[in-house]
Image (tube, rainbow, N blue to C red; front, top):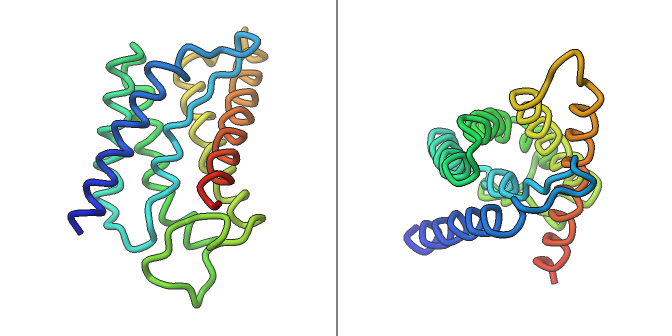
Amino acid sequence: MTADLLKRVLWFFLFILAQVLVLGRIHLFHYATPLFYVYFVVLFPRNHPKWAVLLWSFMLGLLIDCFTNTPGLASSSLTLIAIIQPYALELFAPRDSDENLVPSAKALGPVKYSLYVFILVFLFCLVFYTLEIFSFINWLQWVLCVTGSTLITLLLIAAFEYTRSK
């Protein structure tokens, strides 16, 4: 239990540092920003308590908000994803799988894992950019930001998952 907690704390701070120092400064075509920290929520195992997933997600979002000057956007979006994550995982996890199932392409299969990650990342980007920039006048920018950020985040997660599985 202690090793798992230390590992999670290390990942927590690594995601914050990566987003704040590197990824938060990338804006491809002024629309696509990688929001890789959502991967932290994707990786919670099946048996992890829901209250702990909510707390971890809210704290990660709150710290990201503090460092990136987006008051409440990341914390509210990540908290929503934390609420949905256990149910999305149950939707794609095999019925006879282990109770300690950690979501990965190897555990769920590449197609199911891709759908699982896509749903969570897309919902995160949709809520994040809806809270940040949505207006009826500038709806095209909102669509481009949601689409671009979802795609670039999915590419980063796929690359990271590929290197992690080797």
